[in-house]
Length: 139
Image (cartoon, rainbow, N blue to C red; front, side):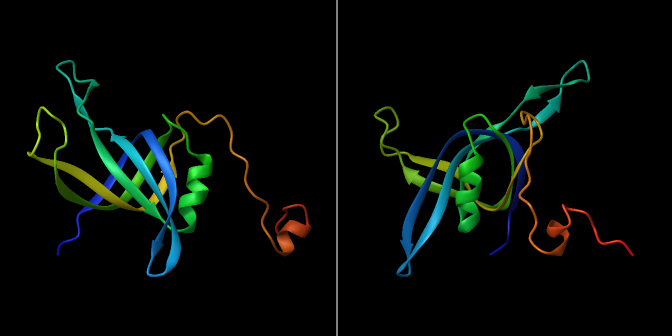
């Protein structure tokens, strides 16, 4: 099976962190409804047309909780991962029984875009550099 890479910046529509059993072990998964941006040049030559699309993103493991703790609806994020198309029958009365196709991404990395961030506070590093108030050893 060919690997299909997904790399887009966009906005969070909604998200949910869950714990699910996998092979007898509890695993964290962060599910995100994500609006990927796709810009194109308009007649004026400016980047003004948004041809974005919605994607279901899943992010597994310990990092899922770390990201969920910082995430909020509308946040700008960058998602890197593997994409695949999924199909399922519609439950909507107007399209009942028809196959619905939805892009799904299993994220390998989620980063926060600098747009919309007011400040960042880093955790102190452990080890000798931290005992010297963050200064690097001289020499």
